[in-house]
Length: 205
Image 1 (cartoon, helix red, strand yellow):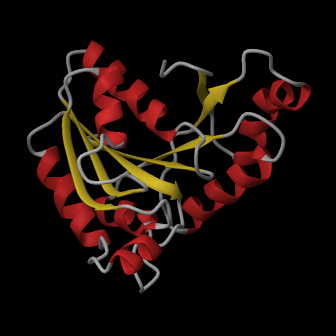
Image 2 (image 1 turned 180 degrees about the vertical axis):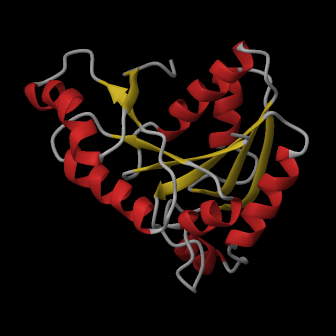
Image 3 (image 1 turned 90 degrees about the vertical axis):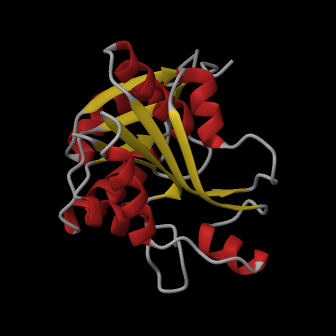
């Protein structure tokens, strides 16, 4: 596996810290790692984005950001409102493919969920993953509602012929409620893929 796509069941669920955790694990095994952020939204020019946060948390990784839009919106909407070109799936695939020739592992971190639109044609991160033939790691919430959202995401992956190695809970609460504790057992059965782990809440600090 030289390219791994990281998506989520929504926004603000721990995709970046999960990407950093995978990067850190690979670095600890002596592998070279690149992190590709196709579309960074909601961050002004000159400010550190998600890729920089991965580097802060994980260490020596190569960073590449294809486009940046200032408003915290879906990439297609943010690009349109900014009057800038959108990111196309083939551009993501080309960039990841080039990085893969120079690194042992390339992590492609999406924006929002799997089917958030990249451009006016309705292209998504799933289309980029399909062009790459890359597996897609799903980052999910811990609590109530995550079974439905995660299962919808894994079903969408299967419908597109994309491999999903499993699910990571992006922020595991220090005091887990009943729903979160039950979801540890229920997520694999509901989603049809393994629960690979959970990142402790507050880990980025």
